[in-house]
Structure formats: C-alpha cells, structure tokens
Length: 410
Ligand SMILES: NC(=O)c1ccc[n+]([C@@H]2O[C@H](COP(=O)([O-])OP(=O)(O)OC[C@H]3O[C@@H](n4cnc5c(N)ncnc54)[C@H](O)[C@@H]3O)[C@@H](O)[C@H]2O)c1
Image (cartoon, rainbow, N blue to C red; front, side, top):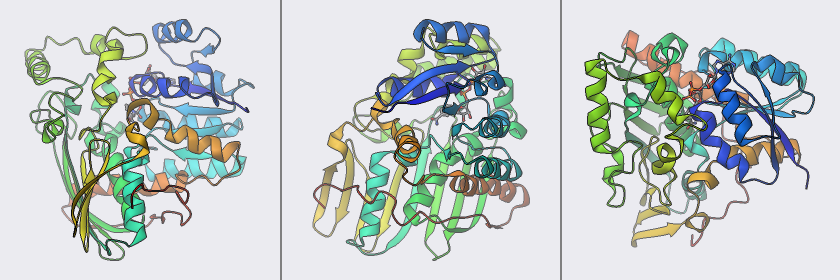
C-alpha cells in the first residue's frame, strides 16, 4: 500500500489531538515533526524514534522525505508555514482558522495553485460523520426543503490553558476565530456553502481573558435560509449536560472548572505548566482528550446542531442522528456507531490521501477555508460596527461531495 509521508509543524495541543488518528492509519507515515520548544521535540522523538525532528518549519519543509505537512502551529504562522510548504512542493493540511486575514488566506490559495500542491483547510467538526450524514439527508429532499439551521455550544474553552498569542485577538485569539470555524463550516456544509450576510455580536466578559469568549451570529444564505450560531466558552454551563449520557463529559469536570476559575482570579494558576501538561507526552495528555474521545457523541465544542426541514427536525444522537419526522422520532446509527474520537479525526487525512494518491478532488480546499474565514472575520466586524456584513468570497459545496456516503435506513 502506498503510504503518504507526513510531517507535523507545531506539535501542541491541536497536534497531540491528531497524532492518534495518524498512528491508527496504515496509509499515513508520520516521518517528521517540527516545533520551537526543545522539550516538545524530545517528547516527540521518544514517541516516534524513527521520525526526523526539527526546531523550525523551514528545516522540516526542506526534508525531501516529507510529502505533506500538517500545520498546527499558532494561528499567526499558518500562512507563513503554508506558503513555505507550498514552495517546497509539499501538500498541506492547515488547522482552523486557516489564517488571520483574508489577504493571508488568498496568499495561501495562490501559493498552492502556483506550486501545484493540495491545500486542505481542515480539522473542523464539519468533517464528522453525523454532520455529513445530515447533509445527505437534507440533499435527498426526502423531508422537504431545508428551512433553518441552528447550532449552539456551551464549552469550557476559555478555562483551558492558553499562551500569550492565544490571548491576543489580533493573532487569531478568542472564540470567534478558534471555535467559529467549526460552526461556520458546519452551517455552510449543511446549507450548501453560499452565505449572503452575517450580523453578529461578540462578548468579552472575563477580566483574566482579554479575548472574546462568546458570540451570537445570525446568517442568511443566498436562498434566504436563516442560520444562527452561538458559542459561550466561559465554562459555567457545559453543553454536554444537555444529553443524559453527557454529564461531566466535557474537557474539565464541573469541580475542575470551579478550581481553575478560582486559580485564575487568585493569580495562582501556572498556565505554561498546565499547557505543556496537555501537549505530547505531558502528564494530562491522555485524560484531557478522554472526554472528547468518549465512545458516544456529546454536545462538545461544536455544540448541538439542529436542521429544520419542511417535515422534520434532524439533530445529532448518541451514535448518529435523530430524525424527528412525520412518523415520529427515529435514531439512526451512522458509521457503525464508532465514528467518534480517533476514527472521526481521520477524515482530513483520508481526504488528503484520496486527493494526493487517488487523484480525487479535494473538497475542503483553500477557497472553502477562505470562505469560512471570511464569515469569522465578518462576525468580528459586524460586532464592532453593529451592522450586517455582506459576504463576497463564498463558494458552494461541490455537487459530488460525499456521493458514496449512504445514510443507513433512509
Ligand atoms: N481542530 C481542533 O480541534 C483544534 C484543537 C486545538 C488546537 N487547534 C489549532 O491548533 C493550532 C495550535 O493551537 P494549540 O492549542 O495546539 O496551541 P499550542 O500552543 O499547544 O500549539 C502550538 C505549537 O506550535 C509550536 N510553535 C510555535 N511557534 C512555532 C513556529 N514558528 N514553528 C513551529 N512550531 C511553533 C508551539 O511550541 C506549540 O507546541 C491553532 O491553530 C488551533 O486553532 C485545533
């Protein structure tokens, strides 16, 4: 079997989240890692003794053995690292948000096109099977037309350890840039991609965190379908509690959240230590991801998504989707019910592999990512100017996307 040789740039918390998915795929060979923190590089080397390690993205990109890079460095480096990789002929998966400005996103698209490499805007929850199955149900027209989309999330995102750059909105810090892409990508995927406008308000109300921890946004598609997205990351109420099997399935338990908030107020929290503990080889790496890798869906960071059609409401269930239709409520299992955790996080790598090795189209390409970023930026602008922002860079979901996906029992 042809293996795709991947190098990771930025082996932080987001990187650690994807490593188990890479390990579990025999088509992926993790051959290199780059990070500017020597301790992280040592831990990476301990876990992957065969892999080459580098202290800069530039050195990794110059490694002839690397065919593709997974960019999970801080947001402000995404454009620089993607352009560097493209110039060295490497295919690219870039973490959300794709970049911090539309100009940077356009530079990335242009560099990938000029150098003939694939650029995948990845790692958003829109790649998960229940969301993709929901799109297929909408597309089928079986329950009538799509009439409305609503996604709400209550998370403890603001309590997780952060570095200085993550606490700077100019560098892509805060909920709209870091969590917005999950919900915006999902709304765009379910509604066909072409949003017309957005009106949003953001909230910053925790003095220890000088970045927005909340947003509400109202969006309208070209065809008039409305969508709302909400994310409250302050960690008082956890959306996981909305389902009976989700109590304390968030990243932190309710008691841990109380303790963290208190330590932040007292100024006694060692945030750098907390952050390193959840990166590769850290003391909390495994249990940090346990909640979100639980063998059943809970309303995690992306939240609870509800699609309303003429004759049904469709939403995520424990192992797939609930369809509340004219015949009553049905619970359908998607992907054998195991599409959570590690398996779910393979989607971007599978899409990249199919494109690079199998010659298939790349669905979530640079232009798709740029359209999602445009909405996140417009949310910030709308909040500042207190007006509706018209969108100009939206692209449709490609007609053939997920052609082979069959929604069981439908
Ligand atoms: N999709 C997801 O679910 C998800 C989850 C977490 C993070 N992320 C994304 O991952 C990215 C990083 O966030 P994080 O929480 O992992 O932060 P982090 O600080 O833990 O990780 C960033 C890593 O990059 C390294 N780094 C910094 N500058 C670098 C440089 N110039 N070259 C190479 N490495 C460099 C840091 O040392 C660190 O190890 C962000 O874009 C974030 O949105 C995505």
